[in-house]
Image (tube, rainbow, N blue to C red; front, top):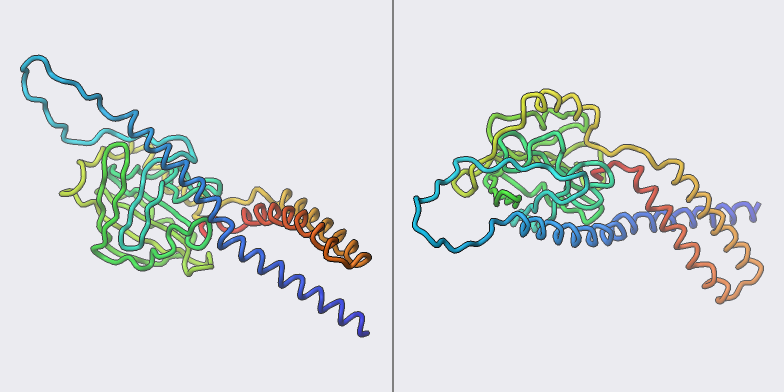
Length: 299
């Protein structure tokens, strides 16, 4: 009986340690990946700005004064996962590259632009989602925003300033917050409360025309008509496509851990312990990376 109780106790301790390691991976390990991706995305976006910058020329003749455009050029969204803008929110210290798309691979890189909504700077409701507790947690302090706070978004068409109008909390299935609007607006979404995907925290903001380039035209009516239906099917959480790989890596971690324990049990020396800890942690890290993909995308 004592052996059974002792074995159960060791098993519970082991499970507890594995859970703590998973929490550590979620809070800090994922941030390392996001930081590397953000560095690449910002460099990529800077190159895009240089390529689209108008050439500098010296006029040789006197001609009529150039005319000023009344609207900004239409910004075409890049492929999914590529940089589309830089979002800066001074009040909460946000300075992140925004990627195109809100799928799990996209949000692991940083805040993501909902592909069926207008681009920032266009007329309509441009929407951006972001993590709140993992992968750098760019929207960790989003709840601190209130009416009047400034949000600046740099696109290839210029820097657009938005002013927060309201904050609300909705269910994950409520996509009405992404509905089209007649004016240039911005919507930010993330999970609520922190460390949970039970609800969604939503920030609405309106374009400050006096401090922004003229907004570009709205998307075509056909795109607007399809937006709500497609967004409702996509939801605000990522899809589950990693169960099989998660299962295989989980079994691999259990196998390596079991062999490590058996070897140490037969040869209880520090050299045996160190010989097994690195392979086990490596396999466990890969297992956690796949397990993370089964969690809600905005967690």
